[in-house]
Image (cartoon, rainbow, N blue to C red; front, side, top):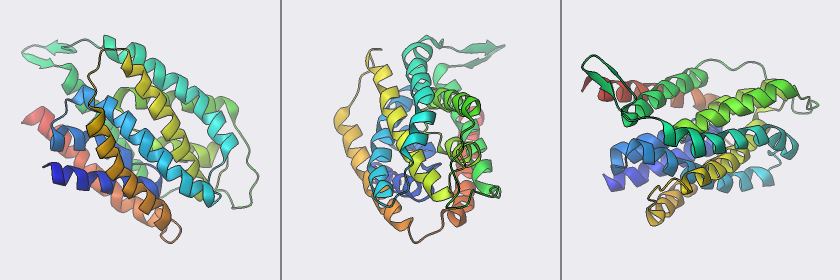
Length: 264
C-alpha cells in the first residue's frame, strides 16, 4: 500500500503541474486510504505537502514567464490570512462528535471526509465542464479588487478546512477576475497555493498536532518529482484537454469516498 501511495503522490504532483489545480484534491484520500493517516491529521499533512510541492512547480512556470507576481500578491494576501485563521482557530474547536441525528452520529473525522468528498465533486464539475473564453495572451491585466478579495477569503477558508489547495477555484478567478491567460493563471495559481498552504500549516503547529516530518518530506519529494515533470510537460501538452479526463477521475473518487464513509 505504501508503494502504491508514493506512486499516487507522483501522479498527484504530475496533475498539479499540468493543470495547476485539482491535483492537490487527491492528497487527503491518498494519506487516509493508502497510508492510514487520520482524516483530521491528513488535512494538516496535506497543507505541508501541497505547499512544498506547489512552490517546487512554481519555479519552472516562473522561468517560462507564467507567474504574474502582482496578481499572486493581490489574491494571495486575503487567502493566506483566511487559511491561517481557519487552521489556528476554527479547526481545533470543531466538536467531536460533530452532531447526532437519532442513532446516527457524525464524528469530526467523518465530517471532514464527507466535506472533502463534496469538495471533490465540485472540483470535478469545474474540471469537466467547458471553460469560458480566456483572455488573449497580450491582454492587459485588470483587477476586480472586491471580488478578488472575497474569492481569496473563500479559497483560504476551503483550504483551511480540508487541506486542498483550491486550484479549481483559483484558476477561474484569475482568468475571469484578473484577465490572466490560462498559462499564466496555472503558474500564478501554483504560487498562491504554495504560499497559503505552507502558512496555513503553521496554524496547526501550536495545536499540539503530532507531526511525522520524515514521512511528510519523503511524500513531498515524490510529489515534487511529479510536479516538476508536469510543469515541464505543460509546455507541450494542453491542460484544457487533460482537465476533463482528470475531472472524471476526481468525480469517481469523490463518489467512492461518500459511499465508503456513509454506507459501509
